[in-house]
Amino acid sequence: FAALKGPSRLDNNDLLRRCSQGLREHPAIAEGLRRTFKIIMVDEFQDTDSQQLRIVGLLAPDESRLCFVGDRQQSIYRFRGADVEQYDLARERASSVVRMDRNFRSHGDILRFVSRALGDSEILPGFMDLEAFPDRPDGYAARDMPRIMVEHTQAPPAEKGFRQATKDVLVARNAEQVANRLQELAKQGVRPGDMALLLRGLNVAEPYLRAL
Image 1 (tube, rainbow, N blue to C red):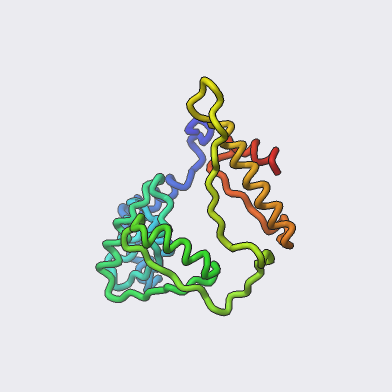
Image 2 (cartoon, rainbow, N blue to C red; image 1 turned 120 degrees about the horizontal axis):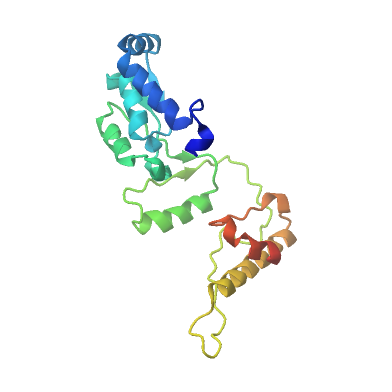
């Protein structure tokens, strides 16, 4: 990657590093920005890393001028250095907190399932339950089928000399189950364009494509 980037190209980390460096080494620039922007707002605060936090600190050393929006349950960038604990600390220091617990995207059935799976089980400590927006349009066509279905893939009986089915056999069986379920949804009036299949990686996509 370094060879491809060469000396004249900058990636996102380079931009952040140079921005932080410029604000530190040229206080007049930082002061000018502080005078220009009375309030600094940071969205998705739970996914900020140490370098981004340094920039925020240089622009808003007085945290009374800082407004941030975040949700620790949506922290997904730890692999890139995001530190959700910094979000927790900032939330504790905040002079006021506005709780936004109304979900405008998801049906209530989805939210209850997530709450049971992650909240009641305490997989996510301090889980924040959400309420569905009551006037959200409902376009679910398969009225005779539940909105949420959890299926267990049953391995076929082990052949003589084998203790368990191979991974490939299990993936193929799971793909067949998913294809059958999508076919049932289609019969109930769900358009193929409204269906989506999420996989852990493209390396397992082929069996699903064959089954579909």
